[in-house]
Image (cartoon, rainbow, N blue to C red; front, side):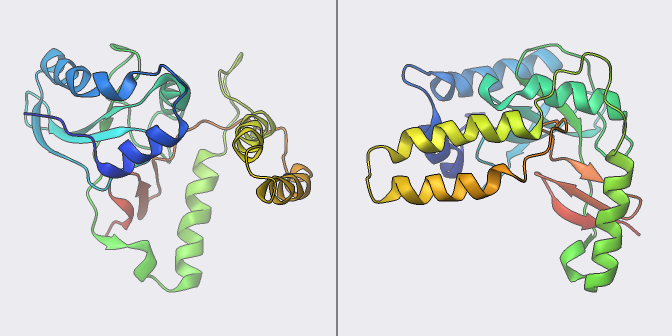
Length: 212
């Protein structure tokens, strides 16, 4: 199978990749190798997909549905791996393997039934709050995660760098970052956006979904 990156991913990587970065060029071959190494059967590439990784719907050798996710190092996939291992399926998808290939994650695939967006607002908020309670755990010792302040600070520098070329945009960026700085707590974040609760599951693959 030819792994063609979704247009959204191509566009986003083109906008954010540093000079000389060849992750996107090597992505099809890396995906082929990841599939072969794990003896996976590919169903399809998830489209439109995300802005920082390639998501492929696959099945294991025993037929179990799973998700293969490939991300560049700047997206911190190893921090996501560490977070999922630490959560161990509590409020988040299961990590189906330990580190085999850097930047490649094999994850539990969620099975959507009911969109959380279809629930009454109060019920949807309860589902979201329940998921957050499950995810709110003490980080492990020497955790590899950035704090919110560290990540937003890094992203702020990238915004300033891109705004320097436009004298009209730069003041607006400075104003926005100035107001946002007071809201940056020193809490660890994981880089992982694949979450679930007893009824509702949220993932970059299936969106937010409900379970009976």
